[in-house]
Amino acid sequence: MILIYEREVPESVRAASPTLIEAHMHLPRQVAETGGRIVAGNAMLPASTAVSVRDNTLVEGSLIDSPQTLAAYFVVEASDLDHAVWIGRMIPVADGWVEVRPILTA
Image 1 (tube, rainbow, N blue to C red):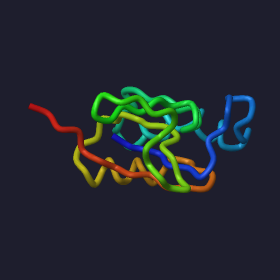
Image 2 (tube, rainbow, N blue to C red):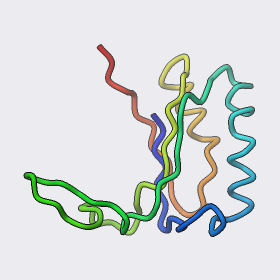
Image 3 (tube, rainbow, N blue to C red):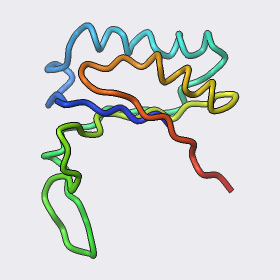
């Protein structure tokens, strides 16, 4: 899984950087050229729209206190972790980073 963190998450696709949107549109083809595949992915709304649950108590917003927030994710098929990291390096970000993390499987 590739997690994308950004300082600011746009309120809508229209509010996102056109350059960043264009780069993401080309991403599936670029990943396929490496032999990988994007299985799923979605952008997130800002953390202020979240509802967190801890100990069965609801809290509006995210419980993570950081200037960066989870902005999007991709589930990718890759030959190994190094390949997934290579794909992660292709992910366009505005002002943040990506985290590549293997998914626990049975």
